[in-house]
Amino acid sequence: MNIADMSDRILNGERRALARAITLIESARPDHRSDAEALLRQLGGANREALRIGLSGTPGVGKSTFIESFGMMLIGLGLRVAVLAVDPSSTRSGGSILGDKTRMDHLSREKNAFIRPSPSQNHLGGVARRTREAVTLCEAAGFDIVLIETVGVGQSETVVSELSDLFLLLLAPAGGDELQGVKRGIMEMADMILVNKADGALKSTATRTCADYTGALRLMRKRPQDPEGFPCAKMVSALEQEGLNDAWSAMEQLIEWRRDNGHWQARRGQQARYWFEEEVKGALLAKLQTADAQARMAALAEAVGAGKTSPTGAARSLLESLT
Image 1 (cartoon, rainbow, N blue to C red):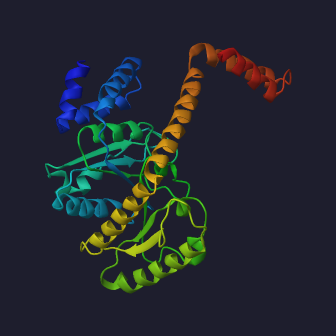
Image 2: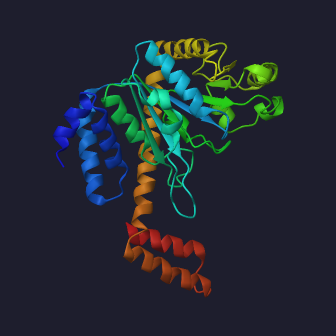
Image 3: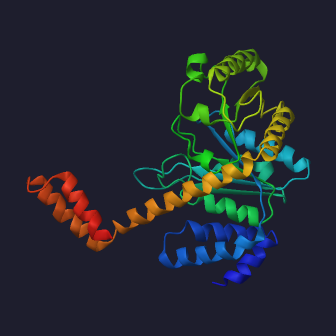
């Protein structure tokens, strides 16, 4: 594989090369991992930076419809938009439908858009293991906005906040009351709550839901990275393209404030440290998958089961053998 040629093509914004590169970094083959690391090093000097927007919400809330409408609006403003959609993988077969691109029919035909569905491969936290590296590739390809859509699994889905500059939580009308709103977890990670489907018969319900969450957000402790008025709740209708400009203006206001007050780069630095620690943990877990480690674990497990050693002592013995 010609890494230099692939790097040049990505820097020139070629979407086919970008798609091949993401396939490369998602591969678990040792030779592919080596090529992926070489490619990322080659692209590291580009110093291109996109606005990373994470998006979560329960299944059926309209995430794909919102991304298509929001993405089309951003393209209309002259911006290039990449979408990384993480699809849940089956715990039985390991397969994924990867149908998000089909849902975004109009956006997928835009030359200034790139949509890539990826399987979660049962990685916890709502994102795929290599989503962070895929974001880096999209930035190198010159995209202005990278939208990261999570699998939509619930309140523990907070890893996306370690990938994004803005974290949006999409909710449906009548999705909860103020008590639901003050629950910890995904709610306190959100920079903005968007109540979708604020149209037709659901508009009045959406108005009440938005008011409930606005009240709930006031009860939360103010974060140092937020100006007055944030986090906030707003109503949108992805179907009728209403409220999108207002939401985008609020996002721009928040990002500008964070840049001016030093929170943007500080947050990027914190995220880099987080992913360094995750890579170390991943490497240690990979060592446990080798044949020698598996044989050692089996022997120790038998000893533990027979009462010859304690679980703690066996674990310590195994870890010492890995170093």
